[in-house]
Length: 351
Image (cartoon, rainbow, N blue to C red; front, side, top):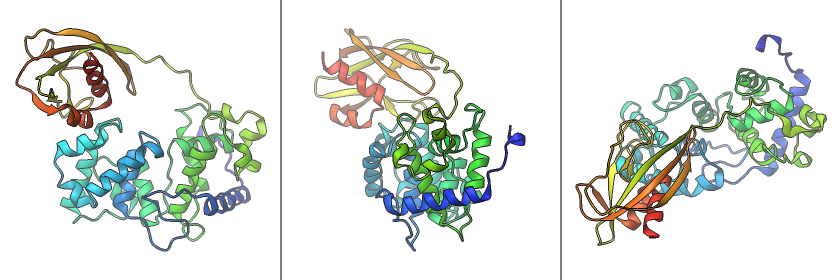
């Protein structure tokens, strides 16, 4: 518990800060939303916010082309706020966790409507925006506005757990790891808050990796208690994983013979909410119980997908015909559909 945690020695904390910032000054990644270390100008809050929302569910290499497409198509928060829901949801397809796309729009519209198109410049003001959790608000405050903020993501948790050999397993360790990150976070007059936050996240993602950490390249190796143990990958400690539940259902792929496929708009609330999808049944609350139209349906196989909290297997049924659906060219449908439905469409077309 936090009450029993020995506060880190101030000299050790200062040595860690100095070593990490020197490393970041040489090894900082060049990213389209980031300013070089030591820059006098601050990063655009819109671009920082957009990148952080995308990166919460995926990696930098996967998120970067999406970021570039979004920021080209909607270069300002006002432009994004004015975008149609379907266009944004379609552009988000492939980034996962589609509630983030809905929150993205809600936040952009709140900034445009309530703040004159300008993001609040404090952590508290950012936290009050819809869809901005503690992590994102802290990241934008530090990187875009130079505020001292404790920015803690999974990478930072891993660095803290290894540096200080925290024995409490995740997720119970999170308050302790956050307290350690807070103790380590410098004041703005010591180091730039944005550079500090990005340096710590870079260290976790590039060097202090979950498996096979590159301890030989780590600027903090001499201060790391997990490395001193000889088994740094043993941290952070974790509780035994509980197997994910498995769901099954049916997905209906109706083609009209002219290169179009019938889609539906999913309810705004719930998994994949607000997205275009194929008609389905049996796997989510409120799903229909049968095909969208009577037709000569053929079973063409199954597709599988792993969501955050469960695994899904869908039987793919294909038919030719017409129905009261949203019709899209197959190529356009591929662009708009979430991964599970794109898999089902690919499977149906293979037949």
